[in-house]
Every structure is written in structure tokens, then in C-alpha cells.
Image (tube, rainbow, N blue to C red; front, top):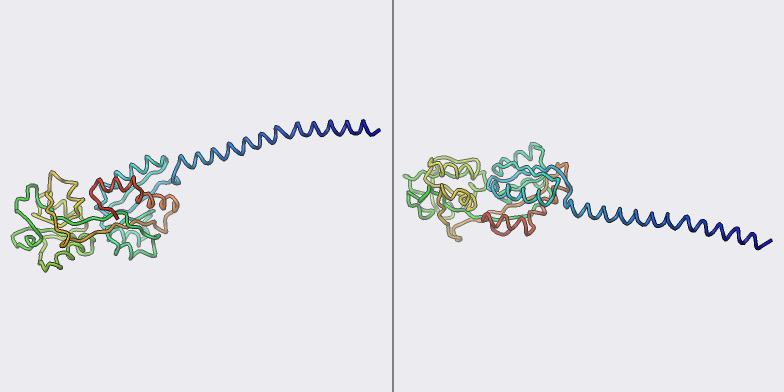
Length: 269
């Protein structure tokens, strides 16, 4: 009686094994394929996809347009929209709760004043000032002291603007008394006044003067008389796309982004 019993159980065991092997194989294939697809998708997408709004200092207008396009190319499905203004205006927007994801200012002082509204900032670039004059430098401006000439129409940024603060810093250090014909809300406004011939000279960032080589000349200011502008970037705590915003801010320090910034004349952080 034992032999038929053994055969029946052996047959049952074989049948069970035969059924389980393909199921196990399917399970392994699905699991492996799913894992590969997940890894592949994550690697292909890079940073989390999102529509990002970045508040950025006016002096970053041209270079950030290039940087944004490069970032979107590297991260399909992500769109970066910039809002450019003077850093003090951007700070006011943040305080008022403007919907945005990241902030880049032209000085650390403005960013530090927003520590309760931002993540940890990181300096992504530096800059220096030059004297912008009309094309060909018709008034023959050679140095900072020349800006004190009362016959010269000089325009500066307002003192609450980073470039205006840097301008006052370097002029006061040399005890040069300049009476500007106007004080502008951002560096691009200063550059515009000079390029349009509404002013003879103005203090702007080196990178801004470089954006209008056919309209203005840039008179270099010696390092010993100059000021260094630092550009910190940070995420905003009110962002609805925190991970994507953090990925963009981190990207600004990568070799790809730094190459774009260097190409526009910005200095290494």
C-alpha cells in the first residue's frame, strides 16, 4: 500500500514544482525589469520635474537665460522661469510671499537678511565693478577720481541696491565725492543710462558692461580700489517644489553651470 501512496505524492510534488518554477521566474523577471526601469527613469529624468520660478539679481539677466536653457536641456520636463530685479526688490517680494522656488542675489547681506525664508545659501559666483562710459569714452574717464568732476554726468545705483552699496564703498574708501545725476533701482538701469547717452559714466559690474560692447566702454578699476560682489543662491522655504528647487540651486555649482558663468565674465566663487 505504501508504493501507490508514494507515487501519488511524488507526482503531486512534481506537479507543484512545475507550477512554481515559471511563477518564480516571472516574479524575478518582473522585479528585475521594474527595478531597471525605475533606475533608468530616474537616471534619465535627473532632477525632479517641475516648473520652477527663480528670483535673480538683474546682473544675472543674460547669463541665467543661457543657464536656464542648459538646465532644461539636461532635465527634460523641467521649466525654469526667471524674474529679474534689483536684489532689494527681490527681498521685498520674498517678504511679501511672492510665489517662487529659489533666490539668487548680488550680495550676501541681502540674502542673510532673509535667513528665515530661505534654505542654506551657497555662493555661486563673484563679480567686480568697472566704470562704464559711452562708446569710445568721449569724456576720457580714466579712474575713479575723474567721477568727481562736476561737469561729468555720473549715474549710480541707489545705496540700498548691492551695486550701489559697492559703489559707495569704493568711492568712500578713496574719499571721492561723487554727486550722481540719478540713483537707479538696479545695475541694468545704470547701464541703460550710459548706453543711451543720458549719463557720461556710471559704476556697473564688469559682466554688465560686457553685455553692451558696442554701446559702452569699460574702464577697469584696480583690484586695490575695487570691491568683490558675491552671488549667493538658496531655495525658498515657501516653494512647492522643494526637491526640484534644491536640485537647481545645487546645479549652479556644477562644472556645466560654472562654465556658463565664467564665459559671461563672472569669477569663481
